[in-house]
Length: 414
Ligand code: PLP
Image 1 (cartoon, rainbow, N blue to C red):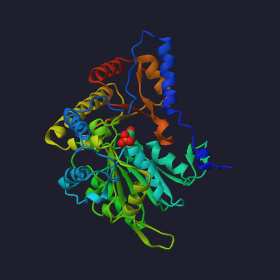
Image 2 (cartoon, helix red, strand yellow):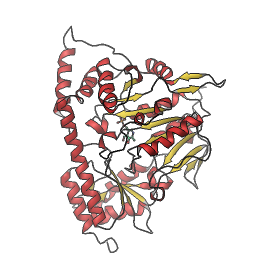
Image 3 (cartoon, rainbow, N blue to C red):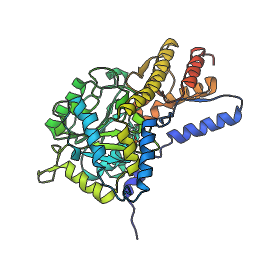
Image 4 (tube, rainbow, N blue to C red):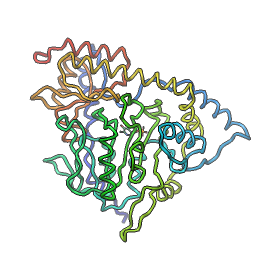
């Protein structure tokens, strides 16, 4: 008899996006004349930039020749890309990272999910609330949580760090000792950021408690303010306690093309039961070589092209387009009387729903009365209740139209 991993039975079904899709489909069926604007998606919409396309075309031609053919590549990524990452994303920011501390992958989602493989089951995990669900669910799957509590909407054994307007979306240090801490900044879903000083508090905590920070910087390219670190390794001491995840998905429109990387400095150590310090880089390398055969050569060449002068310029234009949308949404919502967070260093706009309404009630009202789709904050965790996420990934035309509708909306009368 084959036994299953019963931890999977502990998972809660994720109804968020399927419920949204169902509600939108039903509304659309009953109101075929209404034009619905979707500002709920977390996917990019602008095409891959010419510099990356040219690099891909070139790579395609190359592998069609005897001399240029590529079979299995290095599991950790080609040297050309690891070097480009080190030079552009780290050395250029004054951070010393070696190419063999970088592991190229097919996505930050997989990396954030797979990293749990190298940690013991009895580690105590802390996540922010609300949160990108992957961190939580992958720890539930691997047995680090207790049972789900229907009343509170939380799991036993997981330490939840609320991020709300009350604490300026800056998680407070946990009261109990934790071993693995997931931080994501710029944050999905709140769109908020931490300064270097804010992050230093976490680095110091991790050093004192021998914890590891799992830092998801998937939205780093959207940062525009000074003193907001683009990498946790800009913070002194982080190279001893942090693992960083980055992705070309939101940076360069690679959500469908798939390329990302994880950085594990050789100075980051975990411990055996007997207290022996072990380099996490070595464990991850071993795991990668066993379970992964690398990202395709063509895609890695495309990722490399994001660092050429033309690539950088073209990508900046695309990010600028989304950021302009974010500004339009933020300004428009504020003019309409909403309290709005995020948007400045992020493609996400996190708004407070009007007093007395739940996130889902606001969702329904927004869909039915002004035909706009967003994401209810409660779908990202209990402390997301009372908030709502809009994204800047739509077209400018639709974004402007949506904001006009919201400004002309008499929310109290429908
Ligand atoms: N991390 C965060 C916080 C995200 O929001 C997303 C995607 O929405 C990802 C990671 C996934 O990135 P990738 O496309 O590289 O798997």
